[in-house]
Amino acid sequence: MSGVTPAQNASELDSSDNLRHLRDDFHIPKHQNLQGPHVAGGGSGSQAIYLCGNSLGLQPKGTRALLLEELDVWADQGVYGHHHHPNSRPWIDINDCVSEESAKIVGAHRSEVAIMGTLTSNLHFLMAAFYRPTDTKYKVIVEDKAFPSDYYAIESQVLWHGLDPSDAIISISPRPGQHILDTRDILQLIEDNGASTALILLPGVQYYTGQLFEIEKITKSAKSHGIVVGWDLAHAVGNVELSLHDWEVDFAAWCSYKYLNSGPGGIAGIFVHEARSDQGRLTGWWGHDKASRFKMENNFIAIPGAGGFQHSNPSVMATVCLLGSLRIFAKTTIRAIREKSVRLTGYMEELLLADQETGKFYDIITPRNPSERGAQLSLLFKDGIMDVVFKKLELAGIIADKRDPDVIRVAPAPLYNSYEDVFIFSQKLKEAILEVSVATRS
Image (cartoon, rainbow, N blue to C red; front, side, top):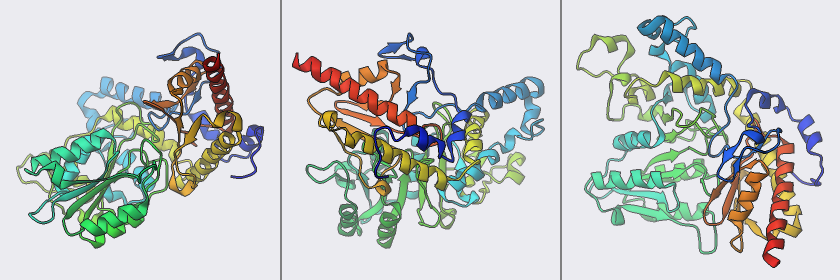
C-alpha cells in the first residue's frame, strides 16, 4: 500500500474489503472479559483488538455447535457413531471432513495430506521416515533461531542415530547486525555442504521475525544436491500461499491452532509428496488400508499417500474444531486471504512508519517487502521499554504477543481483523510509548 493517511480511512478501507463479512464468523473477545496478566476484567464492553493469531487463532462461531453435535452422537449412539453418524460424519472417516480443504490451503493433492497428531510428534514421525543418514551424507541444515521444539526434535533424531549434534547439525544465522536470513546465504550453505547433508528442515515463516522463506527456491537448490527437504509450516499454513506439490517439497508438517483457528492444542497435519509416498516409515493401525483394517491381521498394507503415515485414530473433537474453521476458509480462497493480508499488514506498517514521534523507540525487524513476510510485524523496542509498553497495550484491550526481552509481535489476521483494528492499535501504541517516555524523563 502507499499514500495511506492516518485517518484513511480505516472505515473506507473496511467498507471496500471483500472479506469483511467473515469477521462475523468469529467470536471476538470483549475487553471487559479479558483475564490477562495485566488486565483482569474491568475494561470496556467493546471488542478487544485481537492481533495474536500467530499464537492462537480466534474461535469460529460454528465450532461450538459442531462439538455439541459430536457429544450428542456419543451420548445417543455410543459406538455406532463410528459407522452410522446421523450428521454424515462417521468417526471412522472423520479425516475426510478436513483433508480436502487442508490440501487446498497447502497446495497439495488430497492424497498428499493427512490430518493427524501434533506438530512436534509429526516432525519426529516424518524425520524417522526421511532422515536416513549414511557415513558420508548425514548432516542436517537448520535455522539457528528455529523454534526450540524444532531444534529439540532435530537434535534428538541426530542423537538417536548415534551422531554428534555438534558435527551433524549445521545451523545458519543472519548476517551480523541483521535480523533476517538472506536466501543467498542459505543457497550458499547448501552448495558448500551438499555432499554431506542428508536433510534440510526450515520454517516456512520464521516465528520471531515473521520472515517468509523462499520455499520454492530453497527446495529446488537442496534437491539438486540430493538433500531431502522438509518444512515446518506452523506460521505459514493459512497465512501465505503454498504450492507444496508443485514445489516438490518432500515433506511438511504444521499445527492448526494459529491461522487455522482450530483451538488450543488443535490437531495438526502433514504433507508427503506423492513421489515419496512409498517411503519407509513408522506405522500404526490408522495408516492401514481401510478395506482390510478391521480384519485385524498383522500384515500392514499402507493407505496410499500421506494417509499411510497415520498412526492412531484422530480425536473427533479436535478434528471438528478444525472443521469449524475450514468451513470459513471454504467461503473464500487462500489467494484472496493472502491479498487482504498484504494490504492489512501494509496498512499497519505505513501507520507505524508515519509516526515519527514515537517510531524512534522501536525498529520493525520484519522484512519490508510484502512478499518476504506473512501477516506479522515484529517490533524491536529500544531502551528497555518493551515490557511496560506491552502492559499498557494489554490494559487498553490490545491483545498481541511479546518475546522477551524486547520484541512485540503483532499479527493482523485477514479473516477476522479489520483496518479499524489496525488503526486503533497504532493509536494505542503511540499513547503507550508517549506515556512511558514521559515517565522516563520525569
